[in-house]
Length: 428
Image (cartoon, rainbow, N blue to C red; front, side, top):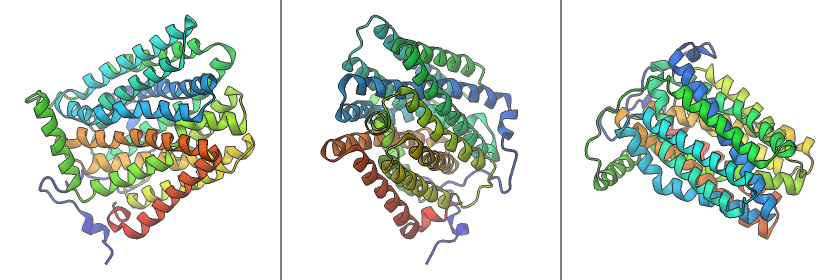
């Protein structure tokens, strides 16, 4: 018998489901949360940081393919970034639950600034090699693992009650806006200036993020407790048990991991796809990523004004839309043919990310939210593993066939989840 929405009301006992905060039952102003200065500064910090992140993804991937001409090298770069995310991601969740999320975020942003500044200096001296880019990727993976759980969970501190869906959707819209602007800027800087110029622009973006975050009023850590390695391991195990025994969180995360493995894996190897199949001009690479972000921005703004209903169905549907867009992209051989499919991909990606993030934060207890978001951030490791798989498939078949294989897998996962997972399907 299908589970009805009212049957999904979480119970109060731990480690089972937690009663979510009051939800928004009707439409609201799309930009409602930006009226709060605290969230506005957080939003500006998001813009600065994500501008650097998206520009770095494009520039690093383009340079690796330019140096090596190998899809396997792109896949290896992605895998090298995934390893530290896997190793340190859980500990990043422990840091988020034990220490000030604002402090952890600020330290992470500073490390990110030093990473891209160092790459800019190396490129300026004309000594940039493949292993430098791999080392930078490893540093970025470490940064994501240690800092991003705190930054994601911090949204819950910055906004109140029923504004969470609106705030997360706006935050995602800001990320997607930077996904429009940053790759385009990165492509233009690469084409008209130099690689070091692109890395120096990223450094400036990180400085904006650090400056804006200094004005955000975060909350102090509830308690630090025992900071030993043994205690950290115990906290990690406790967080995993909490999610494993939680009726809503477990299927959401399982679906997120599969969707990231199959639906986001194209991103790290996309520069190689464009250069090999569509065009070798870096400006068009930035344009295509920007077009995808236009769709993602539109999807995020729509989600920001929607009521908190049928979110499980929206999550599954977004993944299917993403898969359909990737199937179309895999069959494209011209830039103008790929453009509409990139818009569809952006819409699906925005829905998948925003809705999963909102549901996880809604159903998590405060004491576990950092570790739950650490698990959510593990999707980036899954994306990197998927990119490695795509790179290997491309060496055996072709990059277009590799894209098509994972895209069909994503659509299949979405359909199976819609038919066989009533708990996920009926989550409000």
